[in-house]
Image (tube, rainbow, N blue to C red; front, side, top):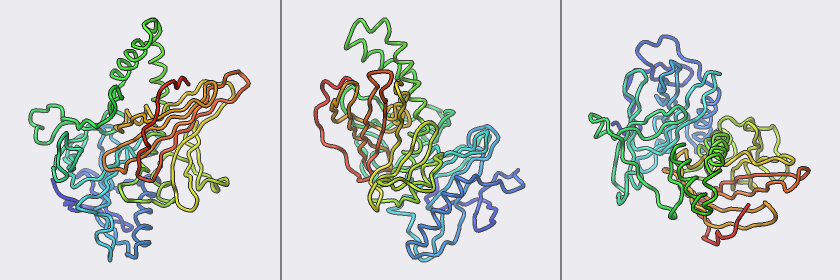
Length: 381
């Protein structure tokens, strides 16, 4: 496992960019616009810090999923910013992002984390091993504890596959459980685990729910799947501890959003992400990011909190308040490895009549704080 910024491999350098390509590759792959926007943000951050962009071997273009399309790993720690050599490396850690190319040629970001090192192993597909340190290494881990894991592609994202130290046995890696309230959904929850937990919770509150719980839980899972693109965009934009990204950087990180040329008053940026409106809010500096939806007389089809949990975030409800019939607000404490703590505020209303408006919004704070604990009783909305 080589530390960031070491990335020793044959490179193809063109237009100031360096690519690590498989030995059989001949032409340089065309880099998707989403990846290029991310690279431009590195250049802008370098210049803003008083440095001179110098490129470097910071892009690995390989097939990481087995679909024979080139995917892209961007290692910020390998980006050369002349005059500010440690701009993208703090305390021996640096950001690594992985963009996976889909059938349409788009390349959404599916992985983002602060790492102390990584390596790419040749193969079909190529394998990625990462090294981290601190609490993500398991219960009781000291801030200096280091651990290494080989990422596993699950068809949607990269998760922990096998511990590098145990790779010969191909056993499952030990996940670091995050703290939370009893009964809270676990981070990285699978569909089967969600359906089982959902049924148990419904039946525990009402024994009669056994007749309809499975159908209700399957419907809730659909809401989670519909919210995954939003969850991925929001997670990618979350800053590391102590960072306060500018609007342009947040927009570049929230891949998949079609940003409007101008934002309405009270917002720093707005755009579309499927059936949702994405936004960056604040006065001058960004204070929050989120998504919203509304429709007349419709059931709410989204669950961003549930989607965040399935993507690996630890989310714990801290307080809720009923504001009217079918309407209320919930506040959650959110944690994600390599990211600052965040608050999630969900406001929603299910239309009480067919002509009334239903709405839903999920806003993630950028202030690095969790909300205070309050009452979560009696919130039936």
